[in-house]
Length: 431
Image (cartoon, rainbow, N blue to C red; front, side, top):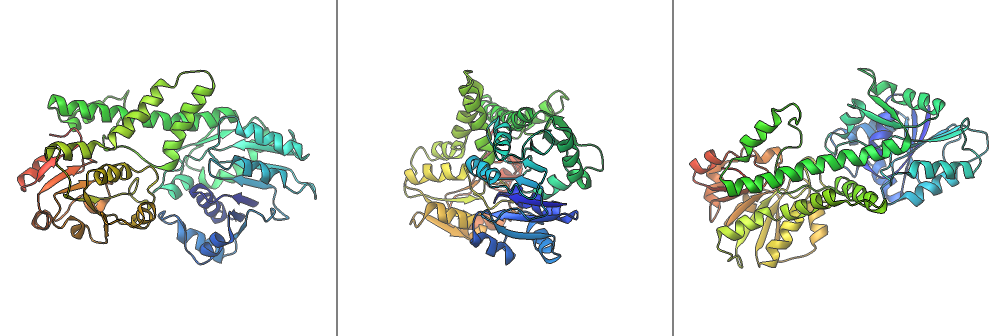
């Protein structure tokens, strides 16, 4: 089958690579010739495990070609796969308005983009406006992007579930055929209407964000009650009605898509005339939580921070990512700088993004070695739980630090073990 995939997103590149790997001829349309050239040289913009290798392999065997969004779909194509950024809805409509109407094709448009609820129906109207959208010759379906950064390729090829929004039988059958190579263990496709699929995607992220913010509130309360939140977490997770997922408290969540989906859901509630009180509070708790480590540092040093040196391990919004979109570390950095603190940072992948975000600053020093970042530091803050940070050389770390003060924003270290090794330890609700 011939497909044209539009978008620079992680979802676009994962979808293009995966669909090409199953034998399809895929043309990936990118926003600029510069990005086309980068990918043709094997330089993938996402540090996603296996993605760069897959794209290179599929280009070499001839099943994946790269072009810009200005290039029309291939002559054999009748499937357009939209995986655009959430702010590019107008561009999505433009793609459909420019679709060739000759020779006659039965267009299937798969909307994987996270646009507002109702966008798939609006795109259907654009398809009909060019005379190729009706029950028999053109349909737009919703297939929301449920991928998780760091496991996106596996999430497509062995998906736990898909949300397919359509009420057009032939379009349903064609999507099932496209996904058949990745849907063999069991039928993972949940069929619903387009609006239901779009809303479900937002509702999922709203629920996950609510669980995270709830646990952060409980962790802060545990601090006041002299309770270890980790035991509480395990007790809650053992209840089958609750389960263990997304019960880990920390110093806040980030990520462009996750945060934007929650805000989009809150906005949808408000524009519908309903109060978004719960989601507003979820977002408020999350922003407040991003300063949790700063508040602990502030109290430890009796509010006197000017002139101190603090090390941060991890600035990416999550492990296995080079992105810092809405990352808790950004809010933390701003709070530290406001108090005259010199900050030394290590991260396995996100230092270039941080340098671009911060610009040239005398109070920000980036390090390729985590122990160099901690040298002569008055405190070490762990913000992103990279695996490389889980078992540090404690003797070396204590030797290089000015003050053996650890602030664990992800609760990955054992408090008792750290204290036994001569460190002052603060976690999120830990004892």
